Amino acid sequence: MCLFGRKSLVTLSLGAGLVVGGICWYLFLRSPGHSPDFDEVGGTILVYEIDSEETPPTSKLEALSSAIQKRLDPEGRHSLTVRVVERKCIEIRIPHLGKHHDEDIGFVKVLLGGAGSLEFRILANKHDDEEAIRAAERSLSSAASSWKELLKKLRVEYPETENVLLNTAPIDLVQLEKLLVQHTRKDRAGISRFLRANFRPNEELQDLLSRAKAGLPPPPPLAPNGKTFKITLNDGDHRLSYAWIELSRSQLGFLSLQEAIDGKAWIAAERSRNDGVAIESTLVLGNRMGGPGWETLLYSRTIPNPEVRLTPEDLDKKFEYFVLTRDSEPGKEVTGEYLSKTEVSQKFERGRTDSEVRITFRLTPEGSKRLRELTTANRPPPEGNGRRGMAVVFRGQVLSAPSIAWTMGEAGTIQGRFTGEEITALNLALQSGGPLPVRLKPHPVSEKQVPPPEKP
Image (cartoon, rainbow, N blue to C red; front, side, top):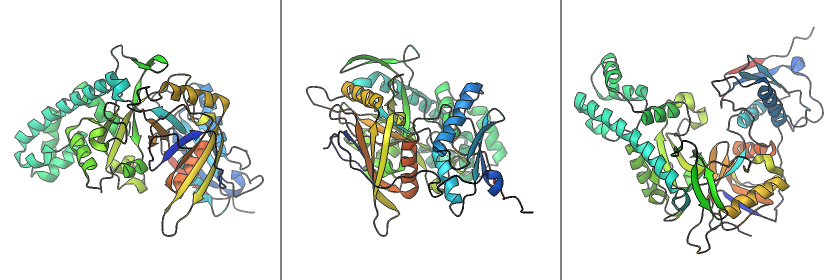
């Protein structure tokens, strides 16, 4: 039974039936029984920093420690220990359990490196969310205008950079300075002085550049009252806020937005990126994220300081793409917290590094109720001239955004092509419940190898 109006690279279908697979992963599943203590065998100590300027209260830190312990070692059989250190850091001691120790460390990093687990969000669309979309467009356009004022001054001061600066999207001053040094004969010190004297970004541009440098999505649109926008759905009025969510690499491939693909979609996205503005999804993706009148908003940017922000396997990534989504209403979130069972089936193909995967899951009664209410409110209108999209968000990225055809609940399936690490990460996160009570920075700030004690 297909419950969505189209097929994508990664699809979500929700209904009463389940296709049961045969592979399930748990961290350290290879080592049955109770494992030796860290002090007996040595291992690896990872330290993660809490992603907050303020120190959370003790109760939240204790809840965070317990949640991580449950996520990494749900049955408590592997002597893995988690504790709070220095009030803003979490230390994780992973005992060396054999030849798979490096894989165990990788699994820990995968599970803690994202923004949480699975979440279902509704894409903003022009039919329902036009006020929020226009607010997002105005904010980005204002930032782009401020950036263009600087470019005008640069082209006067450094006329030899005319062609280079013509298509330069908003970037931070460090990147801009490198670009000018590369394409002019001026000394770096002089360029730096000129930039400091002439770069006066407005509030929107300063916020945009600061968030990009920190690896955060663009700033969300602000409502007239500074809080929420009012929209009307099938079940009545709602007060909502919005957020930009990044598209995953698998989605970029499906949508022909990989930088290596020189197609119309990529060219249109590149033009809007160089202008520093958002673009209606239909102008880039056709009807694949909402048809005319129901389109969402797409924004892309060059990645600042990639050598710092990106993992080694992602260093070839040059651009980030975001879509505008509605934030879940408080008390109505549909997340991995409400999954009661998950199973995985996998189809391998010779010569490929990825494989076709089908992950089935069942929702708790509360999860079924929440999903049913969400999809009831966002069913197609009676006249049937458009559909809303539901973003399947995993670790802070959109895996897929199929359209909603009718009310759904109870159980579902996620399927698509994934690498082995992606398969493990998705399945483990599905089994680990909802997001952590306190957000961690995505990469450990310290990683230390501890050898086993010498035998007397």
